[in-house]
Image (cartoon, rainbow, N blue to C red):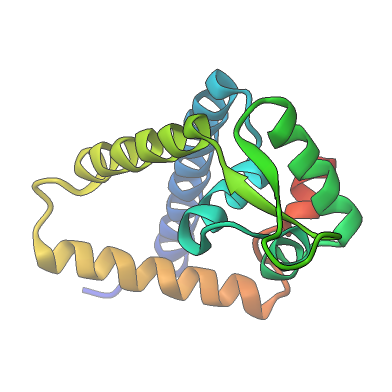
Length: 162
């Protein structure tokens, strides 16, 4: 039994519709979660980076997240004002400051990790390994196709200005 061009096109449209629906659900959930804590995506990226690296110079954060130093200053200022990070004196360079997670920042990241673990279970719990592998392969292929056409995740500076 052969599949017609219209049937294939219909499946492509269904796939696109499902991807868009998934993107909207995930975006809405993320926006609600971050808003509860007074955060933005770019600010969370800084918190995750600090969690991974420990205290670092602001310049290193800017390089790691591929944003201008001025943009990083604004992001860090916002995180300082809301008590997620502090600027601590550098132990050997009195002109420099280390950006450091506060207890609130640490607790927020820990809560996000726990939320992420619960969300993984909601998304994939009970799905067979084979089906999950196929899903992952398909999503990787779709993302590779998007990248080939110049579509990719925004930088932190693009997120902050949006």
